[in-house]
Length: 337
Image (tube, rainbow, N blue to C red; front, side, top):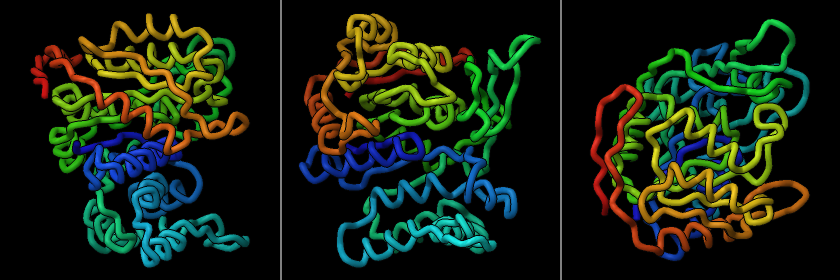
């Protein structure tokens, strides 16, 4: 199976690590594709974005590290690109890989070519692609920030850390062009995985890029949503597992998925999650609860346990996808495999 994972940050790293386990088992093709959000505006990525106008490289770098070769050369380069400078000078806080990607994007003039070059250094067998060739901004409608009704805030960091309640998000520009290679990868996939990750700033943005959203809706691949282990302070504080699904459905009403994977200990009332998922599951789709957490104290997915859960999901029969109607009213037909 050709697998494509959509996301960003640590959540995408967890998914890619699990897919590498499945590749070693022969369940999925070893050439995994990561489609990465490009709206980060904080830290080293934000600085490079503001100073050079380049794509924020941090999430792209982390995806590269997750897919890097396990041989000596691959791990040597991975250690280097993940190294972050200390001190108090101009380089303080920058990761070497961020600088390398920014430099290659500048000299090659093509972010996809730059990613492919770094991928060859790290021995990446798959491919890391941006969801758009242009840096994007996230805007959000937030309540609970004071009088005057909902407030509009802008920027990934601001949305992720808001003390208010995020109601909805959108991108600026509002109809960004998708990376053509990412759209092609989604269209050719046998398995599409969305999540886990920061829900409003890493997961949902992929469905807000019209061409990429439409490719996901039209894909004949198995579509799987992996839920987070816990709500995140800020953007999803107080969210239940079913609230995560409701927000996903609100932002992409036409999306139908074949499976929702969640950690069994993170779902206090399974019946509620099953009911919430029923409206977005394809015929024959199901909620799969399994122990996928690595640590009860610091919420993070265990790659092997997550691989086991995904393996169980893809092992079952797949029903044909129904016709999907995107928000713009254009009907798209999704065939089964």
